[in-house]
Length: 167
Image (cartoon, rainbow, N blue to C red; front, side):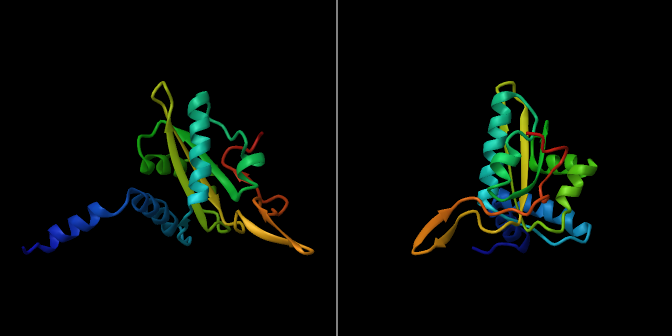
């Protein structure tokens, strides 16, 4: 069976995971502004998912828990929104807001995670976590004992949330 080049490209494009397409949207936006591409990070995506679920459950758009939960786990900045049905729309919303745009274009981030959740009323909430901190889990040796440390030590003043990180 011979496939045309167009058919082969279509098959390849259809087999690319949706997360890759979303990464290309964010990274294309960053490239347009002279910024390096970010690497998708499962830990940050998990943090984004749980916050999106929390906002959907509470029907509330906020940064609740950013400083106490997600920042210590490696998120340096956070964007939240609602109303979009896909990631590309959420990224466009953030690109049209100066504080959100600044987060997406930060030079000090290297990773990101994005997720959404739908509330009972049908409203879709989106969260993007941006990071670049040391590994979330690492082994620390104190004397002859080793411990797992889950929160990386953070630099004072390095927190950023799009509108505010009021918690």
